[in-house]
Length: 78
Image (cartoon, rainbow, N blue to C red; front, side, top):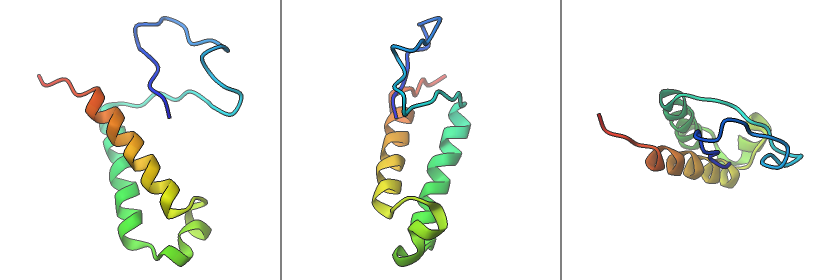
């Protein structure tokens, strides 16, 4: 996961690797993703985690960390 700078008017092929894709999300949506990952890690047993979600618990923790870093890095109090 990478945060592409919103000041750049166009994200082209050079910014996005072949195995990546670009999505847009609001801060609230990312908070929801982080919360869902946290809930999954708390409620799903390790032995069935990958079967049910398609990623390992370690990968889910890493993704949750990345989402958290994006949220912390983009926080702008009103």
